[in-house]
Length: 189
Image 1: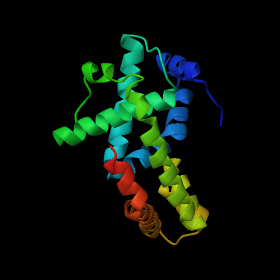
Image 2: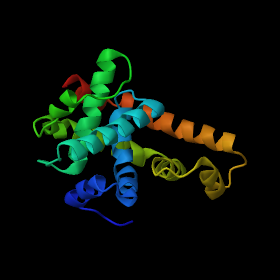
Image 3: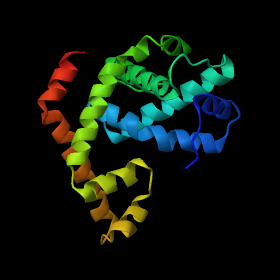
């Protein structure tokens, strides 16, 4: 897969470059999913948050021009985190207003320490899964269609494949939630 610098990503967004948008999804969705899943996110809401964050960044690039003061991945995660927190406080999902986006700054991204701890915890427990679960979840996070995952693993049906994916995700989720480090990290917030 082609790699893009932060500047190329912003330029690609400004030019509606489909390859750059695909790159953003391929490169960063799994990280955002991992970050939100340890906070109790479900797949549907995580997808909504990610898409809303992309829309917010797209609007910011087109309306005001976006000048990054941190890595794009950090900025994207901060936007996702703000959307997530806003939705959790309100108990509903709705489009982000510019005033919320303006509050996303390098200071908000200083939550990197927390982010890094959670990501390390996620990666640790991910590596504890069976090789099959790891591969299945990597394919899933990479947006590989269920039918293709079924073919790769030689499973008998899409229903079984979906069930297997669910069990792998639940196993990962439960391992993370039961880890005493998770409680330490989330209590420190």
